Each structure stands twice: as C-alpha cells, then as structure tokens.
Length: 140
Image (cartoon, rainbow, N blue to C red; front, side, top):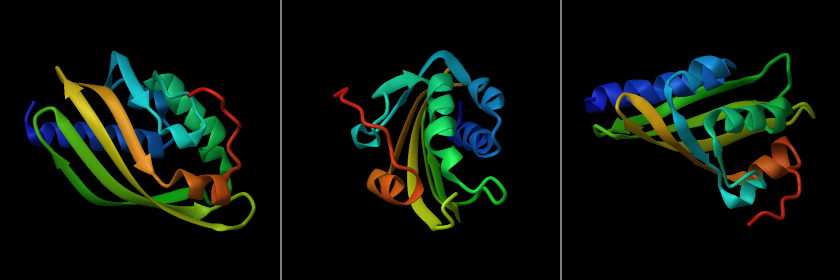
C-alpha cells in the first residue's frame, strides 16, 4: 500500500469507531489484529480489535451524554506504507453534564491492506476523572 492508502485506511477505521459502527471498523482489520491499551486505562492490556472496540463502547463511550454524544476534530494524519499516526481531539458532554475534551494519538500498523495493530495514546487520568470512573484492574 502507499502512504496515502495507509492513512485513508486508518482514518476510515477511526471514522467507523466514531460513527458507532464496529462491524465496519473490524472489516478493515486482519483477523488477528490486536489493540494495545495503556496500562493506566485499567483495561485488558491487549485484545482482539473487535473485543477492544466493545470494551471501549461499554466502558468509555457510554460515559457520554447519549443525546449529544461527542465530536472529533482531526489535527494531523501522517503515514508511511505500513504505519499511520492520527492525532485528534474528542469533545463532548458527559452523562454527568461535564464538558469533556481530550487529545488522542492513535498509531496503526498495516500489512497486506489490513490493519494489524492499533495503539492509542491519551490522558487516561482525565478519562477516569472526567468521563467515567474506570474499573479496578489488577492485571499488570
């Protein structure tokens, strides 16, 4: 794939996630694609992409006000033939009525036209304090 195709694939995956369409996002991934979480998120450290999307929707996305959801502004999208990095800001209103604004950087690895690895980076402490109290996780 070209760098432009890799970037478009990563953006299409994120758009599917933001649109609440996990099937569309999972279809862009290799069957063995993995999502790596930050340890401080109190989530599984690594999961199959579909399982990770379900966990995120059930645990984090559900913390947004269901009537207003959240909005995303992409700031940068860069790629090589096999790697992409997408930088964006998500804003919204929480179920508790608080304003939420967090910056994200998501790294992707792509092989043979499919996403094989998703690695997001963001302020997990802010998520815990502002959006949703994260569950305890003793898995290191």
